Image (cartoon, helix red, strand yellow):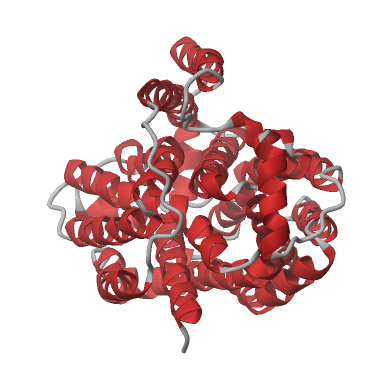
Length: 480
């Protein structure tokens, strides 16, 4: 195994760890509530604190990778994630678990912000699609492991081991990362403290307001928080246009392919990731399946996406990202539409087939879109742009979760929607039929959001992958 292959393997491991943790915790929440003697509204922050911190810090930590070395920040991320996972498993109370999930989230943010940039450092632009295809394997395999192992470990071993499982993987990845990943193109520049503070405040207000909306409803306070967060982005943009070394260099967004790809990623996360949450609510709350059995129905789609990811990545290397990514989003819309046809007695084979269609769509979108982002980013901005990509995706995940809970609670009391989502109860009879109306509405909302992502993906422009030499010409044009 050559050096580039080892580096790719380490990046895939990091992606897989984040994916495992994103799915495995959801399935274990009912058991955590009972074991730590807490309530649903407190336990839900085990998920939300992770998303909040990742959304706020990812961009800044990508910039740290640019300034101080991506290998350093990436490997520190492995260390923090591994330590955080061990502490989560040993948590004596819900408050400790939430705090340690914060530590874990900081580590995950370091991994997310710099993984794409590391791939871009080690692969020429005309070969990155394949590499991003392999990282998509890590995500999909991790999601499968989280789904399958989450049910098995929680049921037969104990919820604490859903965190302990990250420890041996993290140790192996850290050893390999320290040995194999080296810093490339370190550019020492002043850190943009005003920009970091303003962006952190904006994302914190928006994410916290949105998360609280899912928990307690749309209140005046939450509206004010979200509005203030959006307004804070205005001085942030003004500051970034004046400072010498901004957190986000907006000159890069002059490239239509880059800006359209970033926004498509955000809308795809906000639209499609909600479908998994909603579908689990349907399977558990209306069909009465256990979290483990419900999640098994989604495995075929994840497995197929893992197999097709590298193939779709190579396709994007040859013809560009526009066609594969756009077709991928279209397939996700088809999946969401099939889910709008769900009834109280829909055959489970229909759900499996829909998940397979969605898996094909995911395998086409992720490697193509991610490689389009990095292929059109100047080399000196790799870490920052990679961080922006993950930040937008993380915020999209939060919004997808808010959409799921908010729409579902329009037809049943909010606390019932939470209980259904967590698998602590299920709805039958007339109440189940009413809840199904909310499920359908949420899927229609997903289709609308995905339609916007499809338009952005389609109009990004024809994109040809440059060779390593041609990339330098691109960077010179963008920097002018």
